[in-house]
Image (cartoon, rainbow, N blue to C red; front, side, top):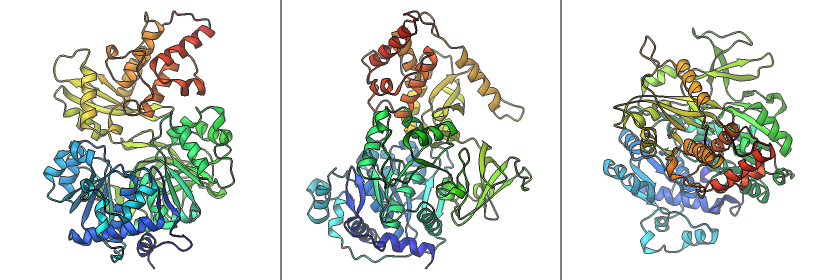
Length: 623
């Protein structure tokens, strides 16, 4: 049986040893393996009624984990192609992709459709709205067997009650496109990574074997399902192996402890997360130190970005647990190189060794480099993408005789371990999320007040990189320009693409070729940030000014009563930036209890005052 056939077989039918009542999904909605497969079969019936044929493209844009799992499983077992999009993407981003791929059907949340009316206006395909699931298993179970309320009867998955569970499975060929994930969305030529059924089957087989995932495994994964690591180390590997997937609430510094409690309560065997969250874990109070100290837990899988060695060791030592670091791209389906869990692939500070694929390092002439010398990392294997959707030139640029050019510079030591040393491409990794500068630049240039723009990543100890937007104004500037541009970005871009800071310049450093000189621009930003101070402000005023900078709001709109624990306005990454900015500005070190207790800006002011008083600084503070 081919890997593609094995993939379809495992999704459509319970893997051997997995009882129907075994939990498939746990968290906001509980769902058994028997129930998910019944809903997948019913969804194939819906696809048949819609007249969808092999290879038809289906857009899925939903924050509902159960709905995404059902729809993705159904597309794979019906021989269709899924496009899993960010449900929070802007109308502009969604419209560009929808017009490009011309889907045969669109499944999207109410909020996504309402916010992005352009999707339904531009699409000739039917738009089927997804009804959010109730947070109790019993209510969800009733949905499977009883007639839904009339106002939800035309919503997914309530409409599935009229379809049978015996809809036949349609197995695709290994080379057929199973999934398209877009790595950019606002540019005129978004890059859609085409992953085949063979790619997915190969990746699942690697995960099962290398990570030891089986029907007894319990995987905690908080990563978004429109990203490859959330989708493939989440519902797909759970379907493939019979494992249980635990989906916690969105992770912030305030909710992180609850995620660790959930892992303990469910006796999780694996936690899939990103380096930024590992850094956040080191800020938790001591009572969380035993979160993984039980027999079933195996390791933490860190993905989607470079893992700092200090954080790596700190987590392992403090929590008594192994951290497995991996390297991969959307273009490699998910992971390709692994540092752990086996001893032969484990060395802290590296990305380990290739597993079930090949890796080489080459110089600018595409010739292999010597051991210990830096070179571009190329990867070849069954996990490497088919290419970019309808973009032959872009595909040819990165694929060479089956080898994928990653754009990352690495070094290989005498024992065969790889270490990332830099990056050729302009991709920014912010908190484990890939941000393409071209996307952010397109959003900036759609603002009438911006004449030119450049977007770069600046190093950050916790986030990996910050996204800095440098703009030249279209006309005379004023003090509110940067904030207006930031507000425009919030409307034009998905939340994770909104820059951390907007800086206004009279001119940008262009080189002879007309391209931005990145090194010169970074130096200019460093000089500006190093020279900033707020001398003359009191402690409260300075704390509020720091908050205004980090959260990109007017200083006058902030008050000590402003909340820091509302995830709808303060995401966890910006909260971490705020903490680090306070430490830099006041030359203090906040402890975990202080950080966790800061619910309002007034709390932050009080904590800073206490630190300065203990240090004998009094109330007179300069930047």
